[in-house]
Amino acid sequence: MTANPLETAEIGTTGLRVTRLGFGGAPLGGQMPEGEDDRAAAMVRRGYDLGVRYFDTAPLYGAGRSERRYGLALPDLPREQFALSTKVGSVTDPDGAGGTRVVHDYSRDRVLRSLEDSLQRLRLDRVDIVLIHDPDDHYDQAMSEAYPTLAELRSQGVIKAIGAGMNQWQMLARLARDGDFDCFLLAGRYTLLDQSGLAELLPLCVEKRISIILGGPYNSGILASDLSSSATFNYETTPPDMLERARRTKSVCDRHGVPLKAAALQFGLAHPAVASTIPGAASISEVEENVRMAGHPIPEALWQDLRAEGLVPAEAPTP
Image (cartoon, rainbow, N blue to C red):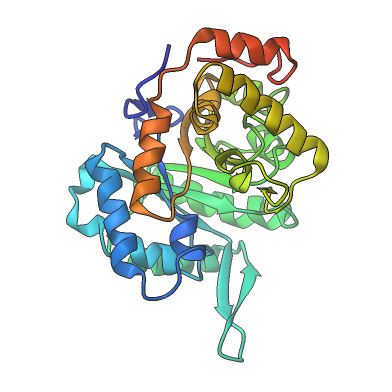
C-alpha cells in the first residue's frame, strides 16, 4: 500500500501539520548559481501547485541564497496554507576578502539576530519551525543558549515548534533526553541505504513524541543516480560496499518494476516517528518527479524481498 505523500502529519504535539513530502531547500542555495532566481522561484511555486505544503531552508544554504529565493515565491502564497522551517547556529559571515565563512554561534544574541535576518530574506513575518543547525561540536552552548531562546519564542507563540537538524543521530538522541523538542531533522541516517538511526533514536522519538523530518533521503545523490562508480554517498565518493548494496537494492526494485527513487522516498515514511521527508530538487522536472515518486505504487512483495536479502532490517517498518 502506498501512502498519499500530500497527506499531512503533526509535528510533535504542536498541532502544526506538514505534508508527508516536503521541499528541501538546500539545492536552491548550493546547486543553483546566481542568475537562476526566477527558475528557483518557479520551482517553489510548482511544488506548491502540486500540493507540497512544507518547505525547509537555512541561512547556511548558499549563504542566504536559499532563503532569498524562497522569498521570491512564498510571500505570494496563502501563509496559513504552508509550513516553513529554517535554522539557527550555523551561519555565514563576511570573510574580509569579499567572500563568506561559516560561523557556528549558538548564543542567544546570534540566534535572535539570525532569525531576524532569515525573516528579512524570506520576506515573511514568521516561520513555523526553527532548528538548531549542526551543533556537533557545540553541544553545551546549543543547550545553554540556543535551546532556551527557542523555547522562549515557542512559549510566546512566535514560533510553533523547535528542534535540531544534523547529519548524525547520536547527538539528536542526547538532545531528546536533555530537552523538550518537537522535531528533529535527521539527514541521511534513516534511508534505504543507511538505517543507523533506527535502533536508538527513532524509538526514543516515538516515546517522547518528537517528530522526525528526513533530510537527504537519496543519501546526497546515490539513490537518485545511475549507480555508477562516480555516484556520491554522504557528499563523498561512494564506498565500494555501499555501492554494491545500492545496486542490489536497485535490482530488487527492477524486478518489481519500481523506480529506486520511489522506494527511497517511501521507505522512511513508514516509521511512526517520521512526519515528513524532504528531498531537494534543482529543476522543475525534479520537483515533479519527487511528487510522482513519493506516490508511486509499490507492492508489499518488494519490501519482503528487500528484507529477505538483508537490505532492510527486519524491525524496520515498511509501507
